[in-house]
Structures are given as C-alpha cells and as structure tokens.
Image (cartoon, rainbow, N blue to C red):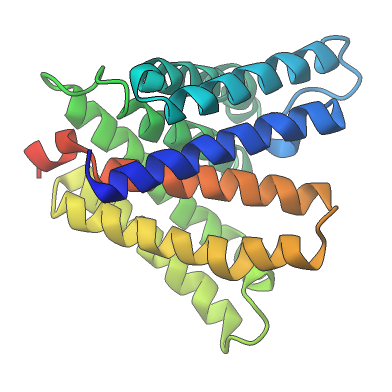
Length: 244
C-alpha cells in the first residue's frame, strides 16, 4: 500500500469514527447525510446502529488484518444510505439537492470499496470509475445550481468568491467527465482529491475552529473529510491505474 493510500485510509478511518461519535452524541442521524424522517420511531435505534457500525468500520480500517472487512462494512452501510435514504428522495423530487445527497453517499461508498478488493477484477474497475465520474459531475452541477450558497462557503479573504464557486464547479464536472470518458483518469482523480482537500483545509476546519460545538460544522467536517479520503482512495487505487 502506497503512502498516499495509507494516509487516506487512516484519515477515512478517523472520519468514520468521528461520524459514529456524532451519531451517539446527538442520539440522531447525521442530518441531511442520513435523511431519516423527523418523528420516525426508529430514528434513535437507527442512530445507535449507525454509530456502532461507523465506529466498528473505522477501527477495522486501522487494523491491517481487518482492513478489507472494515472497508466492506463501511462501504455497505454508506451504500445503504444511498439506496434506502437518498434514492427515494431522488425518485420523489429529482432536483439537484437530492441528487447531491445521493452522489455524496455513493462516492463515499465507492471510494471505500476500493479497499475491499471486490472491484479489482474484470470490468468492475470500469463500473466503479463510471460511478465516481457521475458523482463528480453531480458535484459540479450543484456548484452551478447553488452558486450563491457555495460562494458563501468560500473564505471571505479570497477574492471573487462567486467566480471561485463556478470555477470549482467546472473542475468537479471536468474531472468527472475525464473519469466517464477514460481520459487521464488518475490525474483527474488526483486533481479532484487535491481540490477537495483544499475545501477541508480552507472551509471546514476553520468552520469548526470558529464554532467547535456547532453540530452542522462538525458533521460537515466529518463528511467532507470522509469524502476527500474516498476520492484519494480512488486516485491511489491500483484498479484505476490498470484502466488509465
């Protein structure tokens, strides 16, 4: 396992444990990333189950002998968020916001799945590449549709915040198109991972530093860190190299 992949795995593990702790701490789902209906009688049991599974999978990723099992647990659980929580929203209200939630959960699951070995053979690397590519295009579309909101998240000390929102959206979409078409896929995934890393460093870590007890900021940091790690796992994945 290369150095980049090792670091991405460790960071993903820490993010999973942190998100699981948030499930426990708030006795609730992870806000819009686990869109459970308000007042549902199973909301608390779901939060507890999610906390247990996320922490267990994160610990598994840190143990070499259990890494594949931990990744399978994490990818499977987050994949269920995509299928059972987000996909119904997309089918009922197929707008960009619903698609973004589905894409974020799917990208996390797909990135973690590269650690399981289940996608390493046959045409499976192609399917995973196409899935991640679709997710990135969706990220890009959301930056254009919600450009004003995205611009508000850009640090105030940076100039031309709205232009940066459009620029990052274009990069998302372009890197996704590269993965979909098979053009310089490793480079595209690496550029995407670097850009997403900058979001964590410039937006989400300062957000938590400014409001360390704010549930939304904590959850956004955890999800952004996990998503960034997932894209780094894709960029450093041997299966991606074989189809570049």
